[in-house]
Image (cartoon, rainbow, N blue to C red; front, side):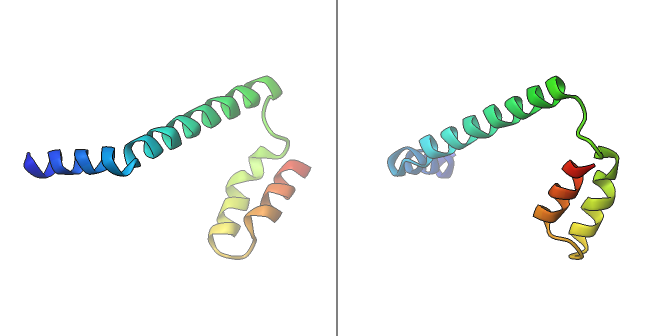
Length: 74
């Protein structure tokens, strides 16, 4: 319990608690906005290729930027 209390004090004193809270809020807002855009626009063209492209990126055979371009191109 003492270690948890010390850690909490460190988080407050160092500003880490506020930075982490801000980062979580930014991530949540971004995820919600992205989900809303996807609902409004419908499925991405070529989204059925997503698994195939992800496998190529994971294998190092394609970079993520090129994969995203291919996905949007349909």
